[in-house]
Length: 219
Ligand SMILES: Nc1ncnc2c1ncn2[C@@H]1O[C@H](COP(=O)(O)OP(=O)(O)O)[C@@H](O)[C@H]1O
Ligand SMILES: [Mg+2]
Image 1: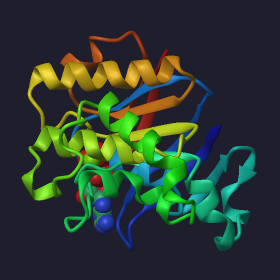
Image 2: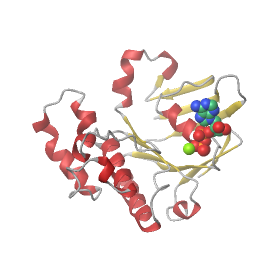
Image 3: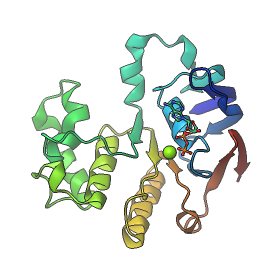
Image 4: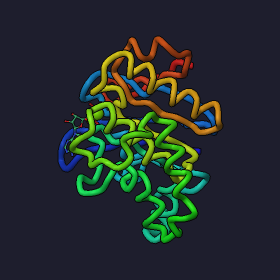
């Protein structure tokens, strides 16, 4: 679904932060993207979400060369990819329900068509009783789950999660990991960026390891 070939990335005039990166994300696969802080995990996620363009190399997504995708096609393509950002990016003036429903609302779909889906998803992530509060009232773990629900509401084919357990305690981290593995069993590809070895040791999944901008894969 996503394929990188000899991809390089630099910010401005700096040194390359990603070098000769070659890998692919298969349909229905589950993998960890790991490596120390500063290794380039977030940058790689941003490339996979087309929020950044590589400085060299080829990225194909759903069979298309991303360098040739017209800007007008990007929103539709991005809806096939769900992202959970490290800093959640919830809108503070919208309730949990409204935040999660937003990706559908902006497509102009009638609320009656998705209301029950949003409610069901919020229950699935354990926020059934937090639907109508504003994000500032939510705990870190609740915000994390709201961000996950928002990433999933449009039923993406692939979910990218950047340090999804970075701000939660170990029991909740295990719970979130179970949500991701369950989602993967239902057919969604999942990429979890993390430097948490304990988390990775709980699931037998492929590991994409970044160090010094280069990448190794352990199947
Ligand atoms: N917007 C940016 N401008 C310049 N340098 C950046 C930017 N974002 C990240 N970097 C640099 O790129 C490298 C990789 O960062 P990042 O992708 O955030 O790594 P990780 O998520 O693994 O901690 C780091 O050296 C970081 O300082
Ligand atoms: Mg990061």
